[in-house]
Every structure is written in C-alpha cells, then in structure tokens.
Image (cartoon, rainbow, N blue to C red):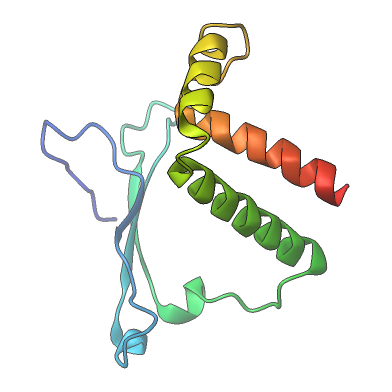
Amino acid sequence: MAVVEWADAIKTVSGALTRINKKSAHARDQKMILGTHRKAATTNPNCTRLYLRGLSSITRSTPYSADELAAQNKFGEIAAAVAARRKDLTKIATDNANFKAQKDEPNGKKTMRSYLWSLEKAAWEQANG
C-alpha cells in the first residue's frame, strides 16, 4: 500500500485536490484526485487516503427527484432575492441597523448575508406556504 506523507505545514487534506472539467472535450481523459482524512479508531497512523476518480464515478446516474428540483428552485429564488436586496439602496440602512441590533442576541445571525438569507427565506416560505 502506498503512503501519503504531507509537508509539516499541512495537517490534514480533505476534498478534491483536482477536478474534472465536465465541459471539456477531454473530460473522459481527466482524473479527479480526492483526498480524505479521518481520525482512526485504531492506533494506525495512516488515516489519509488519496483516490483517483474518473468522469463516470462523479457523474450522476439517476434523474433529479421532484423534491430535489423543488429544493434547487427554492435555493435559486432565495439567492436571487438576497442578491437583489443587498443592492437595493432603499433597504441598506434599515437592514444594517436591524442586523446590528440582533447580532449579539442569542440565536442572532453573525453575518449580514446570513441575516438577509433568514429574512428572504421567511418571506419565501410565507409566500409559497
């Protein structure tokens, strides 16, 4: 078995190190390098793995379900509403004041983006039931 040894500055690696460009004409020839790290339950120090994956292993083989499509549409609509609200000059001052007022409260949103997401999500859910 091969062993991966990282530089001292790198503690763990997790995720795709290289990706496949699915739009490329050479997508079938490309490989994705996936690094994983886990805390082993044993005393084995080799808990980092590298995998090479091809296009067929990262391409979805089943169609999207109705619930997945609905979730994607909801996310897209809320994201568009947040982007529009961030640029709306008539709401910026009010949003800033309301954000600062709730920020230090228990369960308060810590970033402006998460605050706006919570507002727009609530508005979307009220409008769409």
